Length: 193
Image (cartoon, rainbow, N blue to C red; front, side):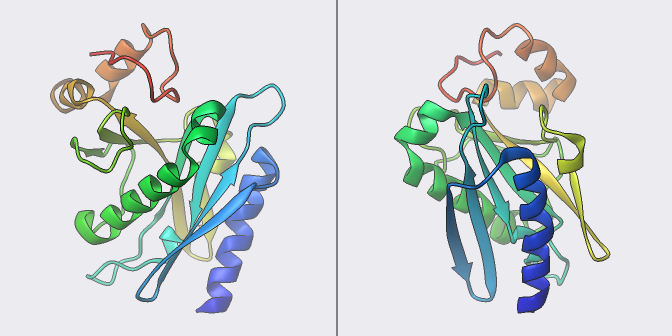
């Protein structure tokens, strides 16, 4: 088990570092036999985005015996990441726990989580799981042995945006976000719907 985890970390962390450079921190969540690591990648030159990405969520097994086939990515403006590092770490670990204990299956692109109390104060309270837009294609899926592991972008969204996606689909949300003066990376933005 430990060797398999080490191989998984080598494959996924190597891909992260190829594109984002050296991580600044690593944090660890352990529950029972589950182990999820969270790496923090500061902005690259000419980039203002701080990335937080998991390794190990994909090694976890659900109650029904199926493997989780996902890792999580949260991108934030560097100023937000610098102001709230512990809060952000807890937020991502809470989402990982939600996936494993409440969702009970691998999240996929366009899955939604309704408004909840997981989000830090002042952030949108719902979540959209999306493909890692703006990232290189090579980060969309990792192959760890026979397992295909998808990297999913955690997009904090407002309740009104959640409702728009539920009723009209992600394409309607995408059209609405094109009118924003801010990127979806900015969690201190106004709603687009």
